[in-house]
Length: 190
Image (tube, rainbow, N blue to C red; front, side, top):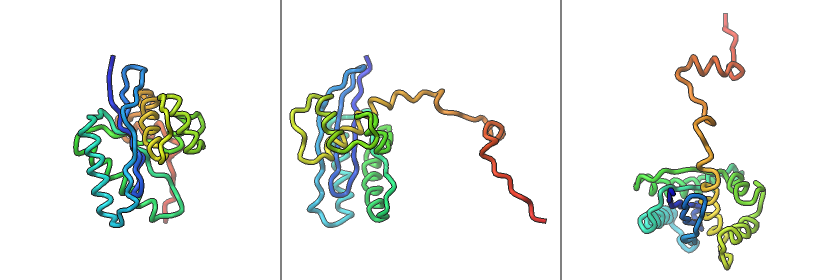
């Protein structure tokens, strides 16, 4: 049976959640989960350094085969999105530094994979994970179960994408002939 370790990360510049699972065939075992609490650190660049170091430490300690990370969602606060993007990029850089494949999942897709409802609350996701992985106590910060949820979502959906689901084209001509409805024709000026 194939064995792999998945590191899931819920990025954040205040609290970063993470979870590690070991997968043997269809069996999943919880290895570790927790948070990196950066709420007392004021300097943004120091936070990014700490996120990189902690991500790298998790990679070196547990030797994951893959990193699953929550992608950014669109919000009204541009500054928050930029901070989240920096945190996400920092964890991705740590995985790239150790040549670990990276997979991104949208928040709704993660919730859908865990609870069956893309609009589930953090509490619902945590409750489902406690049942699935026999976790005795819900952690203080639900970011920990969010990180674990990313790893579990990757386990549930990551291997389901087959080459038949991804279209490939040998040339621009083959793309154009297959996608006529996407072509916008413009009037030429005289």
